[in-house]
Each structure stands twice: as C-alpha cells, then as structure tokens.
Length: 201
Image 1 (cartoon, one colour):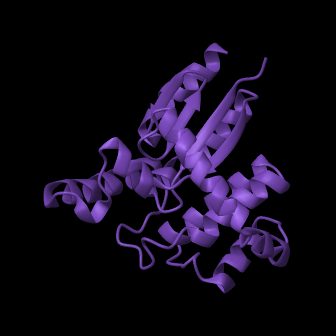
Image 2: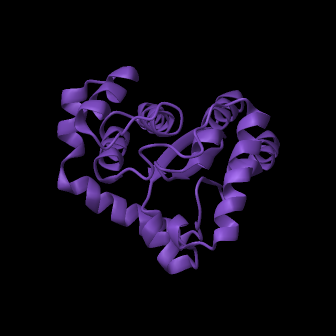
C-alpha cells in the first residue's frame, strides 16, 4: 500500500521553498501520495508557543539569516535573504491553492504553491498582486481566470480554518511540516528522515 504525506506549508516560508523540489522528488521516487495544506501559521503559533518572525529576539532573527544563507549555498537553490515582498498576504494565494486542491487535484495545488514560493524567494515578485498571481497560475499550466475566480470563494477561507485546526490537533507547529501516519517531521532539514520513512514503506 502506497504511503501518504500530509504536507503543511506556509506560502511565505523560505524553508518550505528550500524543501519544495526535494519533497516532490521523494514522493515520486517512493510512489507516495501527497496532499498540501497552506494553513494559517499565525493561528498555529498563537496556540503552540511559536512567535511570528518580527516578534522573535534579535539573536534568533540574525541566526535565521545565517542559516538561510548556509542552506541556500549547500543546496544550490537561489534565495533572497531579504525579499522585497516578504511577507506577502496569503489570503488569495492560499485560497487559490486550496481551491485547486479541492477541485482539480493535489499535484496541481502543490505545483502552484511551490511556484508562489519561488516568486517570493527567488524572483522578488508579489504573489498577493492579482496580475502577478495570474501569471504564476499560468506558469503551472492552469487557467488563471478560473483559478482566481475559484480562489476568491469564501468557502476556501472556511476550509483553511478547518485545516488549521486539524493541523493543531495533529501537533503541527511549524513550516514545512510533513506527516506520514503517526510520524511527524518538522523542517526541510528533516527530509533525510522523511526519505528513510518512505523507504521503510
């Protein structure tokens, strides 16, 4: 029986961006299915003891920048450590990803989420801008008029609230978070352990 990965992301997370291609490749290599959840990490932090970036101590903020540069260089993935449009509003982007997930499929939703992250962290683009988002949707082979119209429907905001509560119930507290059965993995730096779990079957 194929394994399944529940994949909890922030559409503003550089760590999610750094792990994006690798988690897709791992899932494909091991025949695992994957479902993406662009949940509200502001709400998750409020209930799990985490702090939004601006509220963290100067020491933690400085260390984060060093780690970003280290991982960027280690993985060879371009990352702007101070992107122009970070953080960007996730209201419409998350709505579109969830709408695609629920009406078109998991893989197109994952591709769109990863394209949004690349726009923020590599290309200095603002995915909260409708025209920019339209182009990103086109880039992943979807109809921008259809997806944008769908993404604005209030039901996806309600679904995001439900997904966020479900994430809290599963002890999710950071991004990216990978859940395989009862096994929890926080952070792209835990992908080696994710791969070992997938290999066990």
